[in-house]
Image (cartoon, rainbow, N blue to C red; front, side, top):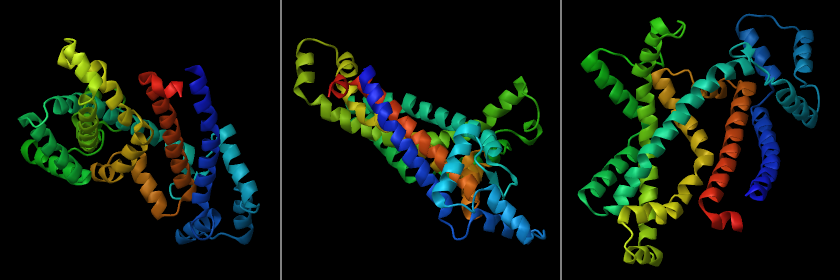
Length: 328
């Protein structure tokens, strides 16, 4: 098992290097350079920028060097100093913006993923075991609705229903009186009154897809001979399902952990805009529109690293769950 993990870790390092290069290329894609965007932004605000000041900006960010030197300077600052550059849109260091937004994003995304799995696995098992029952048809209908309805539309609909019946407007993680207040029991209660809606919306889409995938793979395993043999030996049905076919049927779901977190972050961009959530989704959208590429590149790099790390974790979980994988 240790050798398997070390082999996967050895593959991980080149991937991280490649991802950093791609993220740097993303920064360079818009026409012009960061200095051009920064200077133009200052001039639009009425600030006069001389040629010497513009040259100083280019020198500060290494834009007067070749692309390989610029990449080495950019990634070196990130790795050794945690310096992602400066955002001209917010006029603040990118690392400061990320420190404000990433924890809330991870909290929301990881909680949504945990709720999705806690609900989807038992629902998928019951749907497969009770194939073509009323329960199975009901889960199929709810799954199709969950896949078909856009998240932002579901968020708007639930927000409107809640406001119409209770007068409570879900807007952000906290109500205005608690946004700048120190932590207290009242602030925790206010957080719970607001955070349930984005969690519900983010959970519904993932719940529908995971339930359908688990049902399909589990039904395929339930018809195999080793399950029939276990039944003939008197093993109870649910114990049989949990001990043998589930371990194989859950492999496709474990392999999706690598992209689930970035997918949730990507899916919450519009939802966060609708619900006014302080996550990285909205600022990624704004940075892309404004060509604030140091901010956009930093977010892309973080999401890409999360994808690679999530893939490594899913590989380890697959090896722990299925001995055939680690024995190859």
